Length: 395
Ligand SMILES: *Cc1c(COP(=O)(O)O)cnc(C)c1O
Image 1 (cartoon, rainbow, N blue to C red):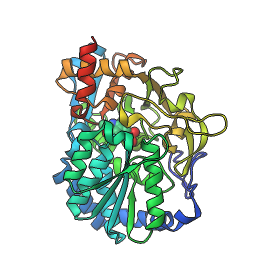
Image 2: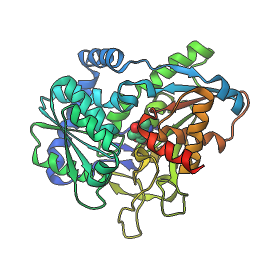
Image 3: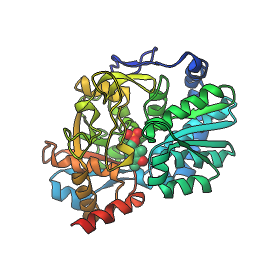
Image 4: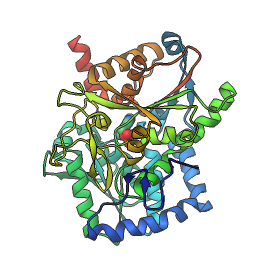
């Protein structure tokens, strides 16, 4: 029995579902009815695979980090999603969804973005296919993430500011949902992580599952065994982790480690460690764990890394963590920064701040000398140079 597969109502255990306003029902229903058939079609698969290969640059390498392994006393491999076109795993999903949108005859694409990484990945595939692209982004994030805003514009996207609430990611998401309600016929909404109403979490996980599909093959080639002892990935909404875990979910001998951002500390009030301080509730269309006040208001998350700065967690991860299948670890800003500098010094790789959280988890994790560990290096750190240089000046 597969305990981790979504059921036909969109649930992983008690988490998931589709809690949406009546007006959104036709959009989500159209997707739910059609997506499985479309993405299982051999023509779709062929086009998806070809683009992943020639446009994204897949398969991404599985790299044995020799000096790093010696330092930590285990065999450590890095799955190099940082080498994907646009610099992170996000494009695996946007390629899949743009091909889906074309087959649903949609002419207009909308997306939400926080740091701008998903916005850039969406603007990229819209340019590739010649489709109109509108990206909603909190006004505060537009100011904080100016380089990505410029990239989106250069790629031909319109960036619309979300002016409500805290003017960050959750407000941008609300604006995107509002747009979709008003434009149900010609618009597809590309959600950027394994969040949102069913079928998004499962659909995005399937597009990202190419990560673990490749890992199995690559580990077999390199070690003679397709399963590592431990896989570590950072979790914002959870798409890179879902992709890295997907083909190992039922392989109980492989430990799955989900790393959340503790921000300034779990109990500091400035954190994004959802699985630790969160509770069950509904956010952006699904029942999951989220950070909320006793009367159900969403608590503003905080992390130095914009990609992990989300008050919820995908329903798959809520299920994996609460059922004990995955272990959750939380890592502070400070420890993530240290881990980024350590990886740069030891391996010549500058990770995204999000990914640096996964590396920092090694300090907290119990493992054995002979263990094989895969760390999903979800993205590269060019976008985080300002934070890195600020840290260097503070030392
Ligand atoms: C967006 C992002 C994340 C967080 O998103 P997930 O859906 O949790 O993967 C992690 N790493 C990088 C590099 C990102 O850009």
